[in-house]
Image (tube, rainbow, N blue to C red; front, side, top):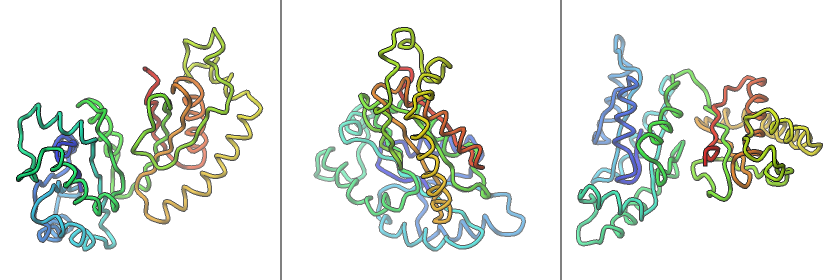
Length: 278
């Protein structure tokens, strides 16, 4: 199910998934959701992946009970919630001149905040929350592809390891954040400054520090404990974010190393570096 704030990217995400071969249904009354599941799972059906796009409307309080009815063996149901900051949503609405579904006598900002409060129970049940405040259309597509391009009913928890720079702000759609700023900074080594953690000289500088080995061993042990536990709890997506000051050197090298260690342990993490080009 795709849901979230109006203007945050629900429709664009649905279009992307339709291009990937998903069967997309928009504005379906919740009472009909179980019927869709029956049709998709009936003998001879060629519909195996269905996207329900649910916005704010008169049926919003029926959504979660209807989705709960889908939680049975053979059906894998996931909720993706799209949101954005109020000022960004205001600008998007003003640029399109569309009317907000909860506008009424409210101002646009008040309508957005009312919708945010209304959808909070749905957000709390989401498997992943995607904040599109800083996304352009290409970045939104990349994020949706990261989440769903390899999606299949038999796939377990999808793990993402990402690096970021604290000076550009914390990533909002993440589960675990690890601070790497205690490691010696290659930025202060003149010949390493223009390079990134993807380059071997920076990688070796970061990983060869005595504290790096102990840190990586402890973090790997922690993830060996946590990841199977998350899988057992039915979590669909897990994002581990590793941060340094600018997101160019330390966090990039550590993210690549952690991803390699996870692969050695049977996981297939996706890797991204949010701020490496900034």
